[in-house]
Image 1 (cartoon, rainbow, N blue to C red):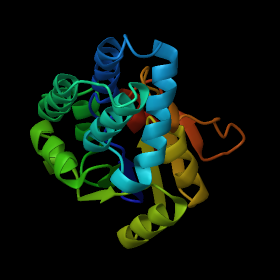
Image 2 (image 1 turned 180 degrees about the vertical axis):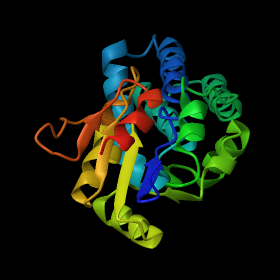
Image 3 (image 1 turned 30 degrees about the vertical axis):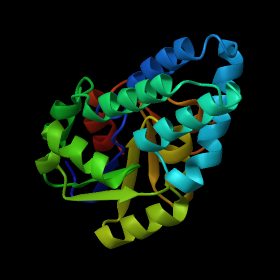
Amino acid sequence: MSARWTIAFDADDTLWENEQFFQSSKDSFTEMLASYVEPDQLHQRLTAAEMRNLARYGYGIKGFTLSMIETAIEVSDSKVPTSTIAAILKMGREMLDHPIELLPHVRECLETLGHEPDIILITKGDLLHQEQKLAQSGLGDYFDSVEIVSEKTPEVYQRIFARRDRPRAMMVGNSMRSDVLPAIAAGAWGTYVPHDLTWEHERAEAPVGSARFHQIAHLGELPTLIAGL
């Protein structure tokens, strides 16, 4: 594998499962609040709270848990019992403690890429939790660098890739909005690896006209893709 490349990977729902735990918690949250609001309206209110709170709490389970509490208070006109608030907090703790589940082909992909490319991890979210997940994953030794950022923008990618001093850079992930589009805008390649449960906030139209956009079915296809570029 060519040493010309910096290959950057997203973490959540690219290397390991993440969104499925949010979806499960949303289902439980819907059951908890069923006597106050219809499911579709609750989903809209929770999504609005999440978007509103991103600037305050950032990405991750802690912000999501606080948004659930805020939404429960709002839709119940402050009548939600403390037992429900306690159940939401318990659900958040269980999400934080959930074991890491690697996605298919992750380890074999990293092993095939080897040490000639510069392999880095670029993820956003809660610093402590992302560090814990990486440690639990057993993948830490594959990465030359780990970057935990508050947001993924073209400027962030430009700054990270400039430090690597390689002529070619690629960002690989399941988010069109955060992994692919800003990486291409920064002058890198963007490789999309779809995941069935990608959060709606991370969805966007694919840049099908860009020569630096690629899509693969799973990470097992990545080494062949890179070798052909």
